[in-house]
Amino acid sequence: MSDCCAEDRLLTLAEAVARILKVVQPVRETETLPLLEAYGRVLAADLPARLDVPPRDNSAMDGFALYRADLKADRMTRLPVIGQALAGHLYADTVPRGAAVRITTGAVVPDGPDAVVMQEQCRIAPDESWIELEPKIAARLKPGENIRRRGEDVRAGALLLERGLRLRPQDVALAAGQGIAALEVMRSVRVAVVSTGDELYPPGEALPPGAIYESNRYALIGLLRRLGCAVTDLGILRDERAVLLQTLRDAAAHHDVLLSSGGVSVGTTDWVKDVIAELGTIEFWRLAIKPGKPVMFGRISDCLTVGLPGNPVSVMVAFLLLARPLLLKLMGAQPSDPPRLSAVADFDFRRKPGRREWLRARLHFDAERGLVASIYHTNSSGVLSSLSWAHGLVELPEDCARVAPGDRIDYLPFDALNAN
Image (tube, rainbow, N blue to C red; front, side, top):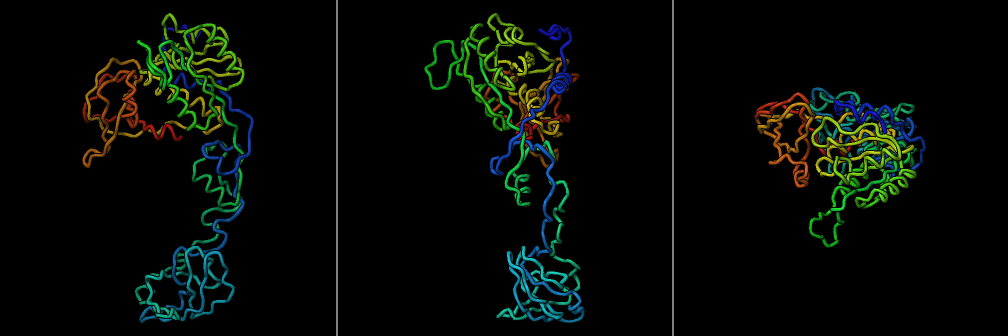
């Protein structure tokens, strides 16, 4: 067992994350997936653009392609309409001076014309054989008006997507726009999840006196799947040391990460920490944070282990702020700090300084004050309903003793934590 567990001073969250990121190395294996299976996965290599986008000059509007030099500044301009350019079809004929061509959005602009006028700005003959433009419209029409130039969006050879990017729908769409049908991504991180405790029973079973339904695994597995991890659910383990030891040993042999809930505090049946110390090493145990103080990080051979407390709020906070950076590094994702919003407190909260703390919170917009944060009516780490009520977390630094109404605070949205 590592001596770091015996340190008198508790590590801060920043120190703990730094230790984790120092020892964690990304997985090396990659796989190639069809685009529709690549959402949320991490791109394994830089992806250069193959094509100019758009591949040719095309129209940004439904209207008429014409020569600006043909327009009159002092009287109405009438131009014959000699053809039609449609999206997906090239207009093969030459457009002579003094003529216009009807054009649809996305259609390639015929050779010659240097602007597209919107059809709403034209007077159009009933049979569409000619158009007329007022002098004020002609005067406002600029070179290249309503024309999207070749390569304006993407240039062939330019960096399209960076290695380490967690692929969002818009990133996958960008690859599709290059004609790319599959992407090389890092393999999924394999994570085993287990909850421990004699008091825990699965939903659907009759509940004995003194027991509770287990819920932490459902939160953890959902969070892991949103990160793109391959999850193995080990279920609920009773407080039996021998069973726990065998289960964790077997799981560590086949997974990158072992994520446990419960059994890491100082109770007489809290075996998880002792078992991991016997099977491997513990890098640290307990942090200067609230909730989530008794969180643990270690390893069993090549398998990283994160021991989370049993209280549901502690589980969520410790996962988002500690396990999530570990998993992103392991996935090969680009490093990123959770985005924070600045808001005004509409609450009064007093506390003892010394630990970084997170309060369950919601935001609303006030016309005078901007973003305003409200907190849940109780700060207990065992109140699961507070997580469902909240949209994010108010973060209090270690030296904060009080938040008064009107104070500026930092707010971490759950959606941003889950999406990045």
